[in-house]
Image (tube, rainbow, N blue to C red; front, top):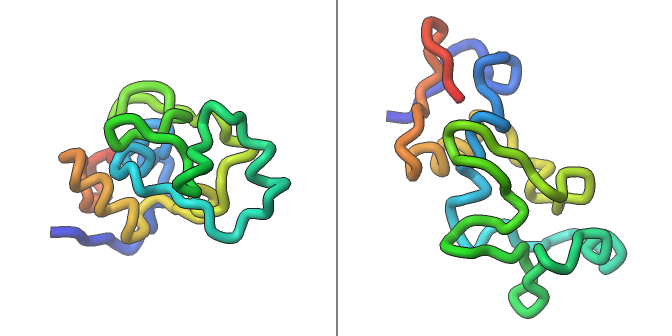
Length: 116
């Protein structure tokens, strides 16, 4: 079951993208470039761009810019220049919950137990 209580995850210190990373390791098809200009894409280091597919480079469904261990500690190697879809992804949004579920991470925001 996927549910969210009255405290949205983005407003809770215990729901941390840096302790998750599931959205960056869920599909080789994501993130795709959508509204980025050629100049914005050019700022992303070429090692992390799959030009032919129009998306970030992935290995085994994991973005190559993702460092760390999913569900423990993660960081984005291109955070300052990450694609728009990555900027728009928010803790607890539907895409986040789907990715967390795929990794077996908690998807219910419980006011008594930390998530992330």
